[in-house]
Amino acid sequence: MNRTLILLIIFVTLMLNGCKKSVQQKNTIESREIIRNSQTKIPCFIGKEWGKKVLDTFLTDTSANLFQNRILIQDTTTLILIAEPILFDIYGKNQIIDERPYEIYLYGDYWLMMGTLPEDWQGGTFSFVINRKTCEVKGISHGK
Image (cartoon, rainbow, N blue to C red; front, side, top):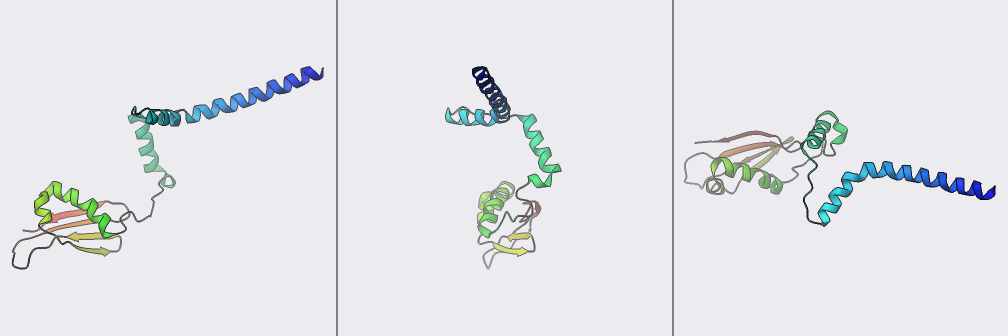
């Protein structure tokens, strides 16, 4: 009798642990796939459908966004690293480099970055405005 009871307890314990592991395995299977694939240098893509779910979560559940109300562009170095590639693409790298050094000002949550010209030159320079919290570009222009 005691032996049967002990075997029954062991069996129930194993079953409960097995069920718990099954649920844990189900929840972490994607994570393990990514880890295994990164160790073997095989790319792992979660897929467009999963990407859409992630996007929808960020758009509908503000608590999912860890950067909410956080300042993402905290300094002029970061601002330049974000703005220059955009400006290079629009106006050409040489044009923007010729407008260095930049004038940069912070007005509330908006960075304003403008090009400069040498003292005796005539013409316009670029202007670039971006929100430092959302990184939304609010305006880009170039004078003549």
